[in-house]
Length: 252
Length: 272
Image 1: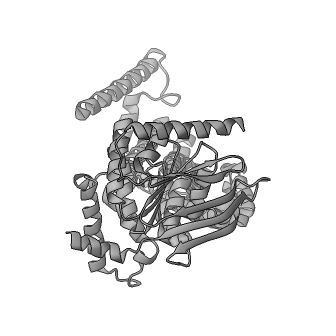
Image 2 (image 1 turned 180 degrees about the vertical axis):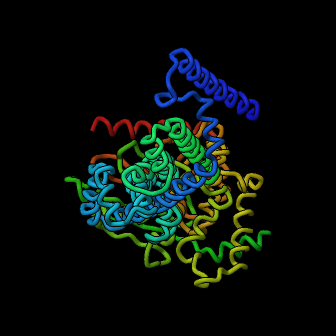
Image 3 (image 1 turned 30 degrees about the vertical axis):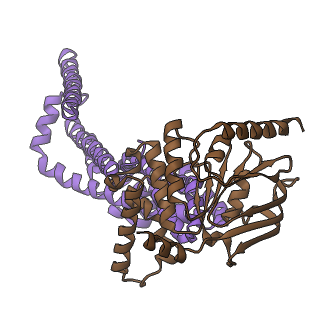
């Protein structure tokens, strides 16, 4: 039954994609648009095959930036959330930093990060980490703080210490909330990485797109864009599947 | 079997509690919630505390469980017989919600108390394998008693409300404490499930000192050895009656009369 339903939904996605691509092709053909304005999907596909070596190389760089950025952002978010939970007075000091990290647009600090961390992969990792830091921290903190008080009361009567409560009750209880933070993070982390590449880099899909754009190779730009979208989508669905597997009791 | 059980009872010395002139006031409140509380809670018996919502019965129970230490001022004496340092180390607490951890299997939920306190103490790095095995055997035996041994590996959300509360009962028994504090644990269940669970709890908690809070007179009449009414503002406790017949009791005419009396008393509270 579920298999059949999965086939059905996959079929729907395929049909939607075909229709969009078909429309795109028709628009290009009817209006006779030159390929430097809007390349036809077939041209993009051709480019995708033709330049696969270059694309693969840059995809690997961007992919590494995104994944490492996610890892760094998650660790930072968890760390901050724990600090705020465990040391209540610290929260008043940390919260402004947290909000400021969101108030300053990540594009605006990108040039500074380039100067500090160089044009390599490090500055992009930090960009991705900064952009996901806020959703991860707030979700984790909310999850930890909103542990049902009944759970905590129960284990208090069992003689659980503060650390035991955190480890055995508050942390697992916060996982479903944290998972929604991670889902958001996975979607927006690529934005940080690519924005970093636009500001200054020598490799990565963002760099490739910028170069292709400057040289009017719009079909290559679309090819890079396509890979980036597929990568982001795949990342999201894999993460979602994994989270559902690890946290089967979550409501989502 | 009976020798074994007597042995078990001997090891688990039951505990009586007496409260004299207890007064309780929340720190953020102007008036006391409870005043002039005098209660004798005999060892190995069921004491029911009846009262309407908001009369402070849950507060009293939570205080006994040591959950209000930072939130209330308590004066008056609270004695245990035999004496212990802290009452809260002698109690197991069962709430209205089953409070099963959704990320733990039924078996692990029953074993929850073994992760904390005294029973969790083992080698610093090396866990005591034999002890863990014994605890698991004990938990499975308790699940057998509540009729859920086949569901040991399930997650709580796969169970019905009645089954979940049975797991909670097994978890309470696993703590192996002389006093069991129950805060309306059956009130969220349907009538038949509640009836069955009352019978089961009655059978399994026979040797314990049970303090059961309820707003349902019928439940108190079925299960209690003594019934206290908590009413007034601030609430005072009043010993309504002691029942000698064996529990769980059948619904009968005397019970119905007693129920009528209780209702009249609780209703009278309104006019004061």
